[in-house]
Image (tube, rainbow, N blue to C red; front, top):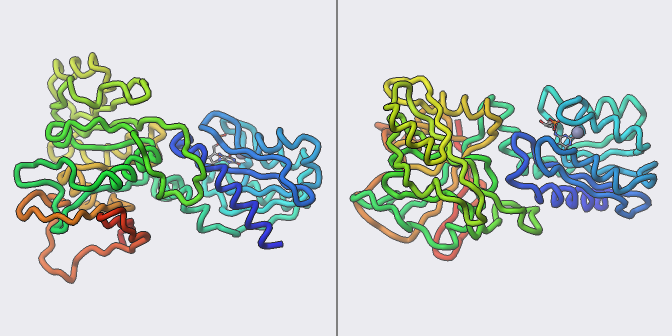
Length: 377
Ligand code: AOF
Ligand code: ZN
């Protein structure tokens, strides 16, 4: 029984993955309805504002949902949000048993399991819970912290440098690593860079040829889309001709958000707006737009996670304030000697004080070492 339950729940996790990159601020959710050992309905949540996973599965099952078991990656919602409660939909359809991987932690939506239990539905939870929580780690972390989840990505030489002494940062890591990095861009709704990176590297920040290895349940790639491109640019120094304004590889117009400090030169703001940017003036702290203020603004906009892509000054500022949740590093077998370190402005006097990462991944990508870890606090 447990083996079968696990198999169908895994199928639900796989369905959920089809929408990676499209659901923020909502989670990825998959649903499978099974009657007499056979799948009678499947669904996933395609994007915020559209019906929830359960609704698609119930629709496909029709009358066959009566007496069925529902396998859900997330506790069904119990609220009238953008859509009506899934708990009621499951009850009305006559589902007899519900197997749920992870509890919803959204105080507004959760509670579906209690309602189903009270109505006499057999409820089981916790199977594959860890995998389901990992699938939605941005969603869960953001809810818990009340700000977007922050993944810091960097390609480093063996001596820990992100750029040579001149600032040249082009192609530290291999093509294989860059493809994985593009999968992170697909995953998180926004990419954040400092204006220094725009001036130095002129990145496009689009999603091209991603390699979806970070996501274990993904069977087929989701529809690709470029992230919201966010530039921390206190003085509005981004050139209106920067590559990030160009349409993406699929012809989609670039979505660029420039977070500038109050009092930045008006004529530059106008030029950047003409280039297609949305420009938002935020209060300064110590002369600059702070990471806290930027994240708070993004969270209000419904951004539940960001990929921090540098440079070292922005990375250091987020790190020093404890705002980095997860790190993805690509370590290339190169040595440049003096160059730009990974975290500018972070300085410790004793090795014993060093930050520690709890490693969640250590894998070779060709000759690069790929690490993922969580900052221990
Ligand atoms: C489910 N099934 O497929 C999803 C759920 O604004 P709404 O109505 O889309 O509600 C969003 C919240 O509902 C979201 O924050 C999360 O708590 C839950 N998402 N629940 O039963 C789904 N996507
Ligand atoms: Zn729902």
